[in-house]
Amino acid sequence: EMKNGYGSKKYPDGTYTGSLKNGIPFGSGVFRHKKGDVYDGEWRDGKYDGFGIYRSQKGFVYKGGMKNGRFHGRGELLYSNGCRYIGEFQNGVKSGAGRMEYEGGTVYEGQMTDDKCGPTGKCMYANGTVYIGGWKDSRPQGSGVMEYENGVRDDGEWESGVFVSGIRTYPGGREEIIEKELSAGRRKKVQRA
Figure 1 (cartoon, helix red, strand yellow):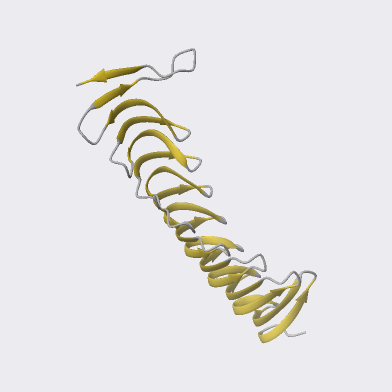
Figure 2 (spheres, rainbow, N blue to C red; figure 1 turned 120 degrees about the vertical axis):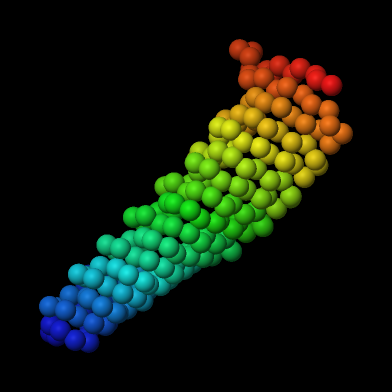
């Protein structure tokens, strides 16, 4: 078995072909998983580390930074359904600044935390609606403004994607104060000129 230089090495879950240092992957190489996934890129101490391309048999393709065998740093993730994420990864998850393009044309730009949109960002929905503000678990949360395709604008507080309090402005300029839900679960609306 080759210790240093170019060679192949079999593992229980697949085969590595590329540079070896002291008998372990180091430098540049390709790992073909038995399940069909393929990683082609840089290695350090037997793990994906540096720039690489990971093609999953599940249909996604990742191109970008790797560290300790995980997506890390700047990268691009293309999903089999046509969605695409370009941005930062930390320890295998979308985390930091990024842009998520969804299959129907909706685009989110902003911060990501543990693979979810938030805590702040802008979403341009396919129908023309735009939301800018706070996010939690990929839904509007906290302070934010939603401008709907029909011209209505909701400016205020959001909880789990629902506008709960603030000012709703209609295309003609008429405003309505939306107050937080009352105990009966109904919103109190106050008309304003």
